[in-house]
Image (cartoon, rainbow, N blue to C red):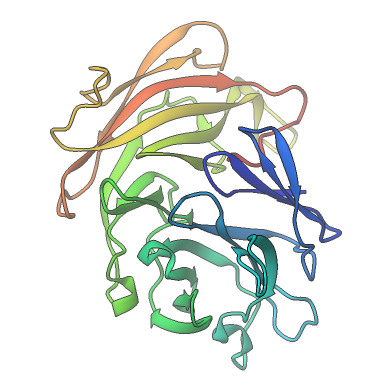
Length: 321
């Protein structure tokens, strides 16, 4: 089953039989949705709430679009007023794939980064070696923005309070921010801020970083690490893993000079629960802003708290909403 965050309290769930439903965490209720026309192998999603932030639209697309297939790979759930009715309802729409998928010589390429632009007027996707394309949600037409890609890996979240987009940087998966407001005009965006956490050197990242937006510039960041047994190697001469664990951190982005009212974290310091092997005591860590500071405004990241999570057996957190 695939789950996608839709709003502060709603989660869209779909399965490999194309069934879909909307779960409201506040009301603890389930609303049946129209079934997808085709199940998705590995989908991504983008949501566009309406002005009242009650419903809106949810767009679901295959992460690796494929040409010449009968399956519908790009669909939308739209909450709208049907003709000859006074009550809104959910409808499902089939949508066209980006035009590059039908180009001669196209090879199956994953969507490297994606986001919502213009308050929901456009969706934006980037693919390595292909470029960046915008989808007009009104006309349902695609257009190419440039042969470059967005400077993110995965989904970028818009922060209205800062008029910037926040996500994980391309290549090293570090928290970062960029101004994407001119992307549809063909302007290649650059990162204006990058933050680097100073974890203990014995922690080796697995490159499985995720982030989830909590609204108002607040995010939850998930990093997976493992530690190695000292002077212990397997038959192939590789170090033996001692422990695998996740670090879940709460962070907040603010304009420089603006206080969050708590008085904590103003110097960029953060506290982690655990020691170098992921258990027990408490130690201190820190972060720094490696940004150029030449964005629309100076911003800073406040680390509120981090905790270590250890799963039983080989279970790992697959999705964070």
